[in-house]
Image (tube, rainbow, N blue to C red; front, side):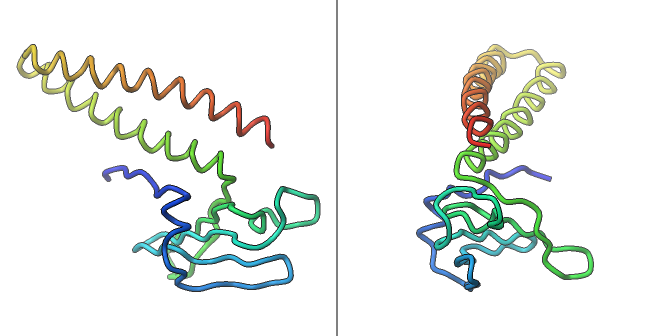
Length: 144
C-alpha cells in the first residue's frame, strides 16, 4: 500500500459540505469521503476542550471515520489541529522511508553516485522532518 499524506485542515475547510450533523453540542461537516475514509470538521461547538463536551465538538477538530468490513462507518480518531499536522508529518515520514528503502535496494543492486546523492538528499529531508515532528509532538503534548 502506498502511503499518502492526509489533506490539510485548510483544504478540508475549503471543500463543500457533503453532509452535516447538528446536535446541541455543535455541528460537524463532512468535507471529504474517499473509498474507505470520511473526514469531518467541527464548524460549531466549543473553542477548546472542556470536561463534559465530546472531543469531536471542539471547533476545527477533525473526526475520521473508517469503513468497516460490515459496510458501516466507525469512528477511528479525533484530531486537534496540532495533532492533525503531526499526523501529516508522520504520513510524509512514511513516504520518505519508502524512498530511502527503494534507493538503498537499488544501491545494493548497482552502485551509482546519482543514487548516493539522492539517498543523501532524502536522508537530509528525513532528518529535518524528524526535528519538525519533535516540535509538533511537544505542541500536542502541551495542549493535552
